[in-house]
Amino acid sequence: ARIRGQLMDANERACAWFQEQLRKPDGAGAREYLAGRGLTPEIIAKFRIGFAPETGFLLRDALRGQFDEEVMRESGLFSWKQEGNQGEQGQKVAPLYGKFRNRIMFPICNDAGRVIAFTGRTLSTDEKSGPKYLNSPETPLYVKGRVLFNLDKAKEAIRQLGYAIVVEGQMDCISVYAAGFQNVIASSGTAFTDLQARLLARFTHNIVVNFDPDTAGAAATERTLALLLEEDFTIKVLSLEAGFDPDLYVRKKGVQAYATALKAAPRYFDYLIERAQMKFPVRTPEGKVKAINFLLPHIQRVPSRIARDELSNEISQKLGIDSAVLRQELKHAAANRGTKAVTAPAAMVVTEAERILIRALSMTHEMLGDYTSDRDGSEAPFDPCREARYALEQEPLQHGLGTESLINALLASEDVDVANLPVSESDRKVLAECLMNENEELTPELVEGALSALRRRHLERRQRELRGLIAEVERKGDSMALAQLLKEKLEVDRALARGASGSGV
Image 1 (tube, rainbow, N blue to C red):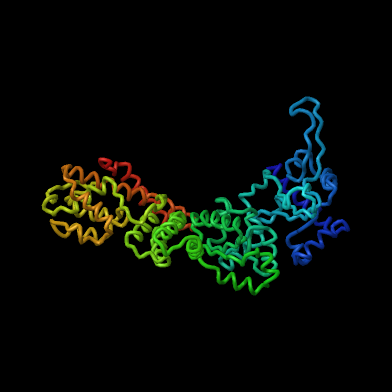
Image 2 (cartoon, one colour):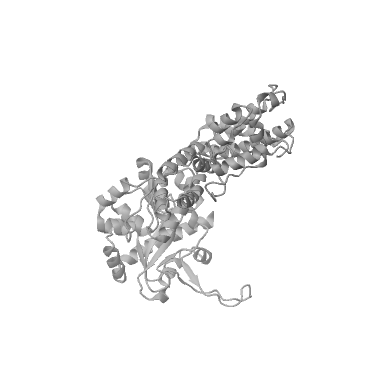
């Protein structure tokens, strides 16, 4: 705690020192650059922007009398050249020199507004001067993936407006803030981390992501959106015209143009659907499959099952996917996060448990109705046909097989007419093979094992959903809902522990 407090003081003193250097004659070039970027003296003061002179020993000398050597070396403000072998007795103490030289200095603050690190923007045109932007190394105070630039100034506006604007760079953030959009923050990198998402979630779950529209920016947008989806954020995506980052757009197009673009920002999935339509020829079956495979990983990250079902319906409509088989594939994959991508729009695949249940459903009630079983501790008679229907409604078979119309058709009569079932020709062939394979005796135990396998799959899916719901209500502080969800999860855990898989078919 002592060293952290001293490091905080050292960064605060350094920030004030950089601000002072900006006002001196040596800071004229930095002041000219900032004015050219449209930053007023008020904004420069608001963000405590400063200047690090070319000479690397001035900051060291300014802080040396106030902090000991350990604090200076841990601060991230200095570099040094190692002299002698490490651990060697009598080793000389390497002299310190400033890490930031001839750079405009942007302080990075924690959410309480205390300076914990810096980003330095070089004023040199010499490639040997180092990277264009140089960040402080990670220190006991500063871990890049745990900090959101400008959150200290933006958090009240975020609370009041109910959402945050997220940009990539610090100049983007400062320019948008100066234009009057004070709920803006920057990730200080190309993509969010889970720690940054949780930090932002303390203030809002609604965001507009406005990253650069180039290839790297688009990739960063998708990575950020994927993570924020898993953290249950409501997301919109603001894509500006090619060649414009937020800073340039505000300066060239004006505040009102940015406000208009912000208001028109599409929802996350509208943005992704548009990208899928641009990347793939969705008028062809092959293009539709590629578009669905592009979208499935994003759908699967949505924590809410209801939201996933709604999204799957919307995407099917917008992409013009009329095939009932393909729509069911989308819904099934969306409901089972982690399902592999679609490889073809037709060829139906059934598991062993599903094959057994197809045969069971094709039989008459009389053929299986005499069998009774104790289900989950209850004394109610076990009707395999009824239980099969229930199981298939809860956990649809792959590739559209487990639809209500198909279940009804299979239960309707003793002689199932496969030719009239509402499925594609290729699926009809698979069904016929399942129904005509009579080499295996369909015993009650075999049916129960197949049903148990599907029940276990249903329980495992519900278990995953409950984990997400519990995390959500914990964030909201809803103790009553939390108690109900924990009770249900305990019941699901116990059911799985009892061996819901039965024979493991």
